[in-house]
Length: 155
Image (cartoon, rainbow, N blue to C red; front, side):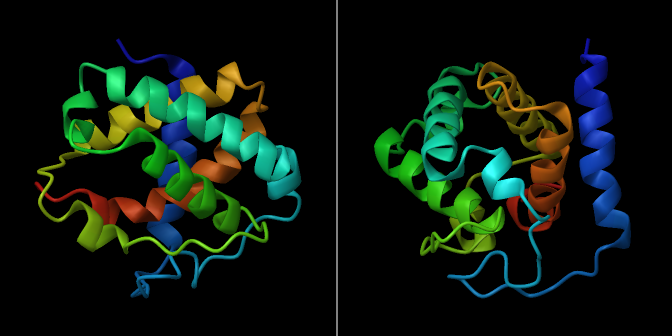
C-alpha cells in the first residue's frame, strides 16, 4: 500500500504537470523553462546538502527491488555527481548540469509509470532521511515532475 504522504507529494508534484506547458529542453539545460522557487537551494542545504541527498538517494535506488535493475550498468559515483549537479541547478544553485537530456538518457530503459513513481518514492525516503521538510520536498518534486514526459518510455 502506498503511504499517504507519498500520495500527497505525488499529487502536488504532478499537479504542476497539468498547468505547465511542454517545453523542448536543450541537452545541457534541463531547467531552461523552469524557475526555481526562491530559497529552495538553501532549504536543500546548498551543494553539500544536495550531495548528501543524492548519495543517499542513489544508494537506496540501486538496491530498490522495483527499479534497481535499471541501474545495474550505471556507475553510482557518476550518477550521484550528475544528479547533484542537476538538482543543484534546478533548485537555483550555481551548478551547471552537463549531462544528457532526459529523453536521450532514458530512451532505451523501458521505464513505465510504476518505475517513475517508485523512483519518486525512493527520493522521498531519502529526503525524509536527510531531514528535508515536506514543503521543500514538494517544491523539489514539482520541478522534477515535468521530466516524466521524457523519462517514461513505455506508455
